[in-house]
Image 1: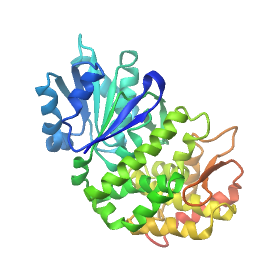
Image 2: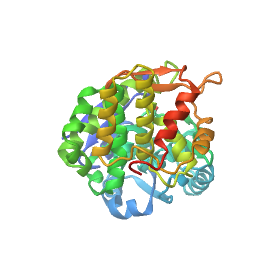
Image 3: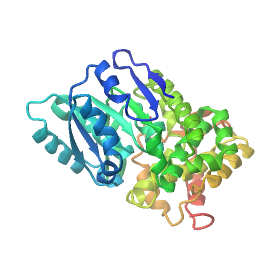
Length: 367
Ligand code: GLY
């Protein structure tokens, strides 16, 4: 069974299809009138495993499909890699009007979208996310770009895809660590906007971690609906609403950057960031302590870390200075008013940030 969720952005509107295969992709591309010359950007292992299920239907439907591969690592989300992909694409797409297909997780999606936004001043692209994290979050909303070595997601733009197709079957082979990482974003949506979703993951944590199809059919469209609503209302993060999606990301991004994007997955880093944001929310008198305990308990139940042991506070603090939520020299924090509600605050005392962050970066507790 397929579901379709609309991101409403006027003439840049598009659908998020959740489907059991890529069979629906060629007719959807044809309906959109997208070019018949396509280049899939992906990882070699992913193409080996699932390439036939993607390229087969496209080629049978008359698409001329080429591929470009990048290594499977956050470090592929770099300016240097974008240039390499641009050069390969320029050589492949001679005298062709290209369509780019981002077939991978958040790294491939962000990188491909960025390349699409600048290649010949912009060509269409479609997101085919293959991780839980990308299906529920990063593939939707058109935030594309690359990291700098000292600042995550620091170079980029808003450039919406023409379509997102979430094939739930590809999630079945995701490594456990990747499934857990995606659940970090799912839990974020629960804290941010959906108590019922949070309760669902609490009740069915085991099934969610195992990636059971019945659980995925609930959580993926539910998160996509929230993301579509937020992006439709605040595409460029100018109304404060899209900022809500960054609950847990302030310390989370800092942890990723301070560890060279190598030690923690994005979901693991934001899990620790959500613990910090929840604790700050409690200390600011916003969040009931029992709700903060539920957040920590759920992160543990899904096998996500609640501490980033061994990350130095000075390194995290340095990375935090490059957080894009800074406004007029002041850090904006996304805090919780209780599960299901968040608020953006600019008045978190730096001493509180340091104390709470340090408590999340000690060697005590889970790694
Ligand atoms: N992942 C946060 C956003 O799309 O705004």
